Amino acid sequence: EKPIAVTAGPLPSLPDYTIAHHTVWGEYGFELFLRAHGVSDQIAGEAAAGWGGDRAAVYAKAGDTNPLHAIGLVRLAWDSEVDAIEALADAVRALDQSTPGGTLVNDETRTRWLALDGTVSFVERRGSVLTIGIGVPARVADSVISDSWTALH
Image 1 (cartoon, rainbow, N blue to C red):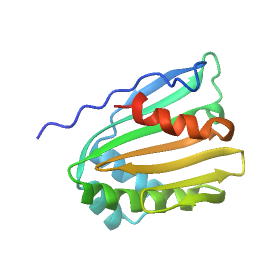
Image 2: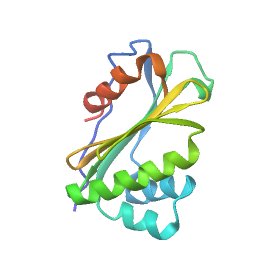
Image 3: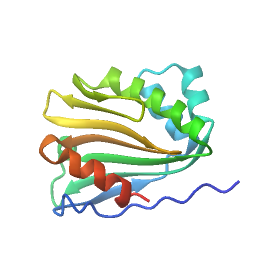
């Protein structure tokens, strides 16, 4: 079956940021993301199995080549809401293990972390779609999270 097409666009809340790079992870790419963040091979493979389509984008200020200043956003579409719920749980596990700091919000559809560097990471689910963000400046986190649902579609 053909993947669900997902495109990346600008972030209205960060007009001075542009897309530095974007790509499709694919089912295997999501599995590798989970494994790279401490999720076991078996669980990562099971979580990735319902993948339907995605787009990963790196946003950066024009001329700023420091990767520590970049924001990573991913939108993942799943074959079903059940697949998305499983993927959410494992993405939360992955980021929880790799984000030094504290948990701001943790409920059945979203988790947010405040990292020691003052950035926010998040995973959020709406129906059969997930968004994931890493490195979002805390001062604009709510706006960027909202934008992640429209900038990546």
